[in-house]
Image 1 (tube, rainbow, N blue to C red):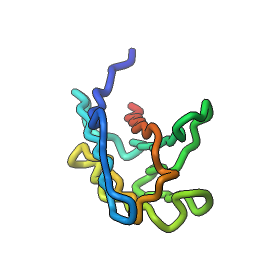
Image 2 (image 1 turned 120 degrees about the vertical axis):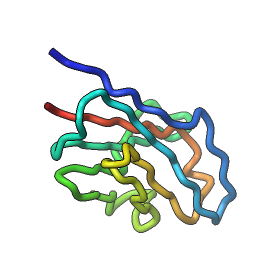
Image 3 (image 1 turned 135 degrees about the horizontal axis):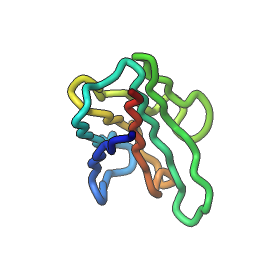
Image 4 (image 1 turned 90 degrees about the vertical axis):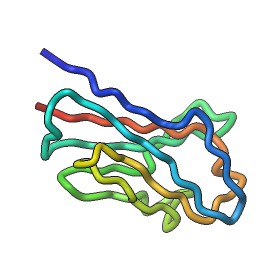
Amino acid sequence: PALSIHVYTQREVHGTVGSPVTLSCSFWSSEWISEDISITWHFQAEGSRDSISIFHYAKGQPYIDDVGNFKERMEWVGNPRRKDGSIVIHNLDYNDNGTFTCDVKNPP
């Protein structure tokens, strides 16, 4: 048997070039939050068909993309125990325009 996790994000987020922006991701599960919880953020650039992984949280540790457009500009501000998987992107750039997706998995 499997149970769903409800993931909530903002439909649209606007930011100013050069400033930080918080991408909020909260979730709800009727089950306890496992030590094996994982949170992954994906980015699909505007006009692109491909999505790339830019952030991953697993085994209690954040793993921030160390290559690509978001290198050294991303900060983990979430707390899975509070059902929060949010990140901050610093120093926004025009190339950051696109779709960000938060994916949460809470294995039994």
